[in-house]
Amino acid sequence: MTRPTPGAGRFAPSPSADLHIGNLRTAVLAWLFARSTGRRFLMRIEDLDDRTHADVAHRQLADLAALGITWDELPQWQSRQREHYVTVIDELAARGLTYECYCSRKDILSAPRAPHAPEGAYPGTCRELTEAERVAKRATGRPPALRLLADATQYTVTDLLHGSYTGVVDDFVLRRGDGVPAYNLAVVVDDARSGVDQVVRGDDLLSSSPRQAYLTDLLGHRLPVYAHVPLALNADGKRLAKRDGAVTLAELGAQRAFALITESLGWPSADPNELLTHFDPAGIPREPWVYQPV
Ligand code: GLU
Image (cartoon, rainbow, N blue to C red; front, top):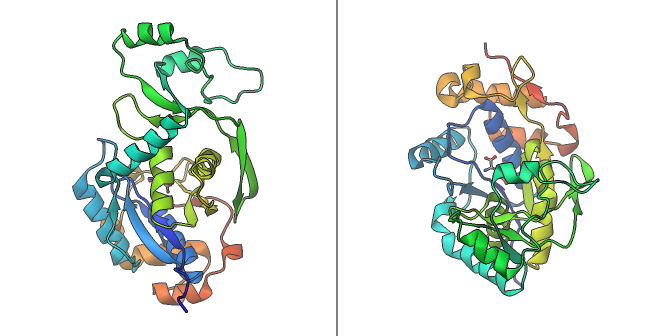
């Protein structure tokens, strides 16, 4: 009898800057969620954007390893997965589920919105263009983005910390005007391809999860379980950033960083495997962690 392959959790940093203690805390939580449920744990480098750097990615991986986080396969670099994004975009296009969008950010913000349409949602300007209008827009020279023709305006996901969460689905971008696959598309393709069935990440991404879940469903994949964990804030209540000082592993040292993280969770510990024995999803603080460098 073959045993079913366990599912997987993952951590997916964008290598635009070194991880700070808040990011590291999210990584520890993602690892704990995966390991405590017998899942594999995967690492993905989200380096599609040209503001990311390979040397930063290598430092991020070294920092995560220094904390005692372990992963089961070689890290996956999104920049090396482009063919898979292209395949999925082509599949959606063949199903008639994409359209070109010529709008600038300014166009989107200034477009009239339907009465109940949420701010930031794409107002659908380019959805109904005639072929003649498209030809005219193309001639203006701006390379178009490719959007999903969504037939929903909202979608509900299940989150282990937030319960049932309903959020906006709009005609979101699948491929940017510069040709780069968009974040929402890449995440869905990668998670499905690598067998990720548990997504643990910062709660700044909770509002993206309905779009991603909708696309996952549209592509015929099983939805992952989500856990969006509270972020770290600085003393002013703003999202923690590098300029807040003494926030990176290089500044804190691995031992100190690990101690701070485990104290913040309420399970002080010096060792990841010991921490694993204490871990209880229900006990995760629900409030943001206010971090004050010492
Ligand atoms: N790369 C994203 C970030 O660093 C995380 C994406 C995800 O976990 O889905 O915020």
